[in-house]
Length: 195
Image 1 (tube, one colour):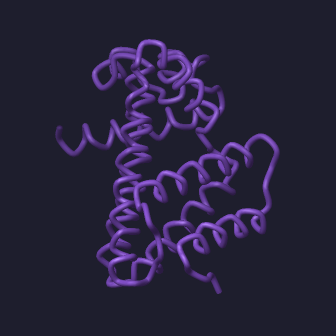
Image 2 (image 1 turned 180 degrees about the vertical axis):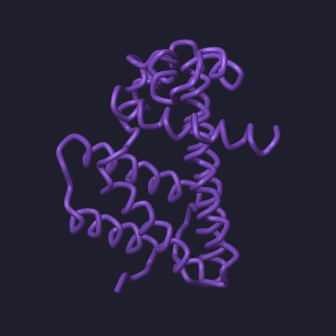
């Protein structure tokens, strides 16, 4: 893809993200995306063949952003504890940002695609992030910054906690202080104190 095509694809993904945020996953049609992007139907189909494909691309963009954050943190020369805390602080910002959250659309997507086993994009993202956190925790234990008997289980538990916080923020509302308490608890289970 040329630069112009990449820019057009990125534009479509940005606009589609807003449409999915406002309408959820199930209610969105390709016409909704065409209208939001102010492009022709054929122009949209050059890039995406369905709302499912489009939504998966939006999820991939979000995962790529998270991967970039972890990569930058991982190469920053910071300790594993500092990297984990910075990661959790980034997650806190995303959790508390009610605007533009795709949590409802993502759950609709997952429920719609679970019967056929097609919700692999979300699982793949979870598994990749869990593996990255597991490596970080294992390195923290190895360097004696953290205490943990099972880095893989700790990584999954952290992600489950973060997912629960995302849902709670959207459904019942959470304060920054409540999220801070959870971050402190996560760090405490790894033998670290948050100041």
